[in-house]
Image 1 (cartoon, rainbow, N blue to C red):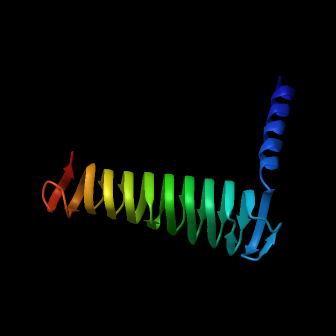
Image 2: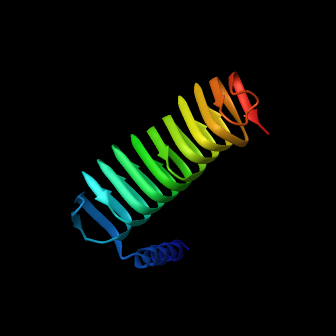
Length: 183
């Protein structure tokens, strides 16, 4: 039984590695990488790793950039993903369209985000889910903002819980203490 399980794991692993151009990419800096590929399952980087498509894990000490990130991305400095599905974390974290969980000291989303955003400062455009941090801001909110200061231009259906809660267009009141929202 153990041999059969080991064979199944081996076949699954080979299938995943065959699906990408390169199973592993090692990157020192943007143009100093082995192998030089645009697609990888695992990216390990030192200063900067720019890989357009990552389906798996990206772990970089400096900064990480991907157009399509499906999986887990971690960088100590800066992480950017245009299309993210999964988990992403860094001190400065930027996504365009994302589904999943992101976290960092500064967590920015420039498009639609669905899931959980955690950070000291969370900034977003179209937020669907939970923003949890000291300062949370969304252009359009569907979900929950939990923090000391919560700011939304418009709430479709949601709630803000914090010390100061601001909804500019359609909240119960423009500014409220403890709770504000719209259902």
